[in-house]
Length: 537
Image (cartoon, rainbow, N blue to C red; front, top):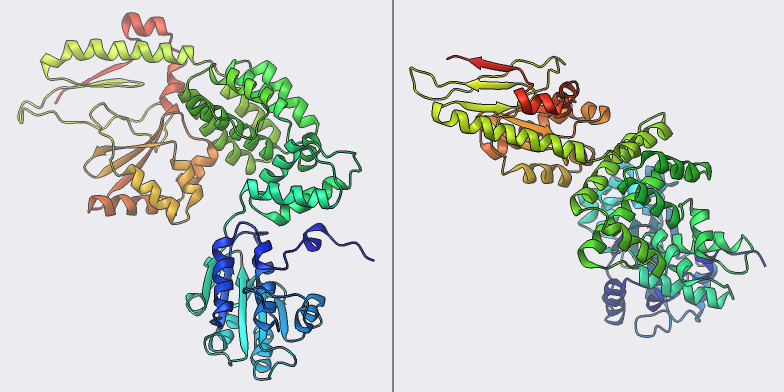
């Protein structure tokens, strides 16, 4: 007998065997029991969640001679023929490879013929979103008013690609991702049935890696079985999946929090030399830091053994929540950067080294500047002078004619960055900033949304909004934000919120920081160490 893959061998044969989709299987069984089966169904959801299995079961159940509680008996002549694939009245069509108008026209011609053995002729069209526009149009009339002996079951992972005319003609059922607990339970049953020894940690790892897809979980399990080990352990699963061991991730994060770039590079080299994927490694570090943050907040660390929980507890007290959040945001930017870089290893190493920069000097500098601002403010408040502190200090005196303070645009700094605009203390934050970037996310502009997340919006004047990036912008981020279509999209959203045309200016916070490097903190505290421009009105 030929070998059969696990996901085919253990494919559900009844609705009750489909796990994690009870909200759908219950409705389908009730329709069969009440003899109210629709003429067209659309099953949507992620891969490996049970869509095709449910379509096959539904096709057998409506044709079964002896159905039981809405389930096919799988023993009658019709059910056996369907399971063997010899029943011509159940037609399975893969739209990925049969997506032309001619393929759909052949269906339109066949529906006029009565079924040979079964009660209904059923068409199961998988990956239906792959049909061409002409094929969808050819299917419309038949799908809306098929003969009484014909039913359609459509399945897809991308329902948003289907025309609304197709969606409106079907009963839609959305499949959810299968939970980790349900996947663990199912894999445990299969391993016992197949006499496979597997550790509890390996079961958890497989369930997490499957990301809600039972078929993926069984494929990973099958790959592990082929290694020939007496027991499938956690290290084997992670090694085959290309995931660094948790011990490696712990050491990398430890050295980042210790601000030790030399040691962190050594730990990274160990992982890279084992051939681990850098994108995967970055994502694992992000998840690990997230788990540290969760533990710091709630003292919960699921899916970790006792030793790993102790390591997380140790790391959680090394730094504050803000530092952990900064690391997560920086790693997310790094992940986007190395995706598009031809020198992935170099960019990854440099990005990790930047995370190891000590925070003390930056904080000291901020404290000195803050004290300086307070001192100048106190000296100038009574004189009607508005203070603007950054890479240069600008004093603006009141206009004698109007007796009001007028803000002057600052001259361009030495780096000649055309997009640079000075942020003054009088600029106020924009309340609708969260709504604007939220709209970008909802409209599917994810790349633009992720590059704006680290910025903040302020009102430069009544016609201009500044988007400031205090930690600077990567070259990739600049390229994204400088695209005309992206600038226009941001301008449009702000204009809608303000009810008038608005302009956008991008502010790179690193422009001024680079100019400050040559000036010492001592000079700044003693004699301000900064150019002072006095503008008379």
